[in-house]
Figure 1 (cartoon, rainbow, N blue to C red):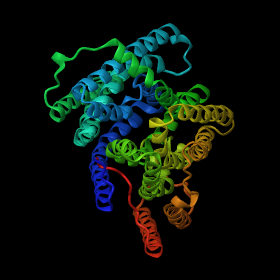
Figure 2: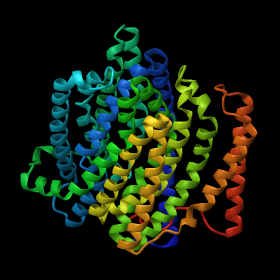
Figure 3: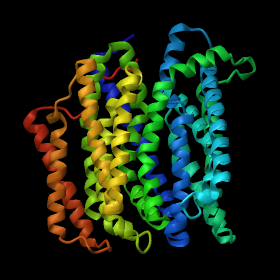
Figure 4: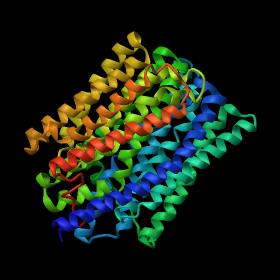
Length: 500
C-alpha cells in the first residue's frame, strides 16, 4: 500500500537521515583506518609504490562496474517484483544475483590476469603489472559483497554495510598491510592487506544476510540457465553504463600514470583519496535512499519520483557544502600531512572536489535512467566518457595533474547538462537550476570568506588559527542557510519518498 501523506513522507526523510547518520558514523570510524593506511602507504611505501598499487585497485574497481552487472542497484527491483509475484523465496533471488556476478567476475579476472602476464613488459607503470595480476581476483570478492549488502539494505538493515565497510574491511586491510611492512615484505604488504580486508567483509556480509533473511534455503535452490540468461539480458544497458562510469571515474588516474609516471599517479591518487569524504556523504544516504527511490517509482510513477529526487538533491547539496569548504580551503596541509611532495596535488584536489560535489548530488537523477531509461542513460554516459577521456589526454600533457582534474570537472558539468536535458525530453521533468542554488551560494560565500582571510595557500601546516577560521567559515554557512530557510519558508528535507 502506498504511503504518501506528509506524515509518512517525514517518516521516509527521517528513515533516510537515520540511515545516513549511521553510515556517516561508520565512515568516521573508517576514516581512522583510511588515514592510517594512507599514512603507511605515503610515508613508508612512497608515491611510486602507492601509485602502482592505486592503479591496480582502480582496475579492480573498474572491473566491478562490468562484473557487478549493476545488480547492487537493480536487485531492489528484482526483490520487489518477486514479492509482488510471490513465486520464489527472496533468498533465491539473491542467489541468482550472486551466481551471475561470480560467473562474470571469474571470467573477467581470468582475462585480466592472462593479459597482464602476457603484456607485463609493455605496461607503462612501474610495479603495476604485479598489482594488476594479484588484485584481479578481488573483483569477485567486491561484486559478491555488494550483492549481499544490497540485499540486507532491502530489509532496511544498514548496520551490516556500516560495520562491514567501515570497520571489518578497512581495519583488517590496515593491520595486514602494516604487518607486511614490519615483516620485511613491503612489495606484497598492500596487496595482502586488500585481500584480507575483502575476505573479512565477505564473511561478515554473509552472516548479516543470514540474520536478515533467516535460513537461506540454498539446499532447495536450483539455478535455471534460462532465468539467469533473461536477467542478464535485462541488465546489459545498466551494466554498460556502470562500466563506462567505472572506467570514466578512474581513467584520469590511468592516463596520469601512463603520461607522467607512477610518482605523479601516486600524488594524484592521494588527491583523489583526500576528496573521498565528499563521495562518502552521498554514499551515506544511498543505503536507504536508493531502495526508497525504487519503491517510490513503483508506487507513484516517474513524475512523483522526479520531484522526490529534486528535493533529495537540494538536501544533499546542503550537506556536502561544508565538506567542500574544508577540503578546498585546507587541502594543501591535508595533502602535505601524508608525506613530502603530496602537497603538489592541491590544485588537482580542489578541482576534483568540485566535480565530486556536483556528481554526488546531481548524479542522484541517474536512478531514473537506471530504472526507466537504461538505454538513454548509457548514451549519456558514453558522451560524457568520450569527452572526459579526450580532455584528459589533451590537458594532462599541458597542465599536469591539474589538467586531468580540470578535464574531469568539465566532463561532470557536461554530464549534468545532458542529464537535465534528457529528463526534460523523455520524462517531461526539468529541475530548475535555481532549485539547488541556496546551499551552493551560501557555501561559496563562506568559502570565499575563508580563502580571503587565510591568504596565500602556500603553507603546508595546519595551525590553530586555521582551525578557528574553518569554524568561522562553517558558522557563516550555517547562518546563511538558516536565513534563507527563514526568509523563504521552505523546508530542507527529502519529501515525496514512499516507505512502502
